[in-house]
Image (cartoon, rainbow, N blue to C red; front, side, top):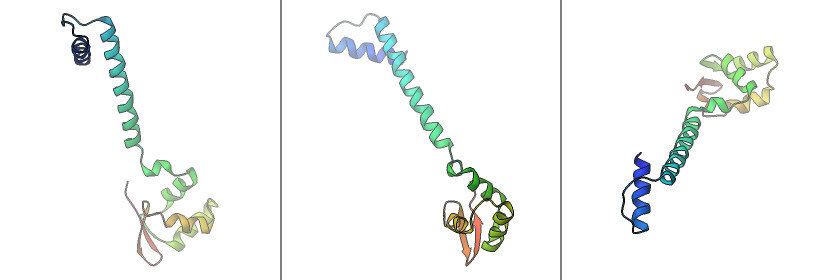
Length: 114
């Protein structure tokens, strides 16, 4: 209703007409305007709702989930070797992702909380 009133007032003012009622044309315009804002709000919430974790590949998610909260590089290599899910070089590059892991000391990492 508020969009309808605004659109009708603007239309009446621009056309130098007296405002008497809200036309069907204005109501349809207000509905389209509401739909536009609603669809954009939904898109924004979808973007906000997704986490960095969601952007990982399935293999990366699987490895990340299997790692303990704090671990040594050698423990991580053991885990990926048992699963045969990721190459050692890929795992070491994966550990460099500061959004996922925090380096505590040489060869010791901690998973970041989401």
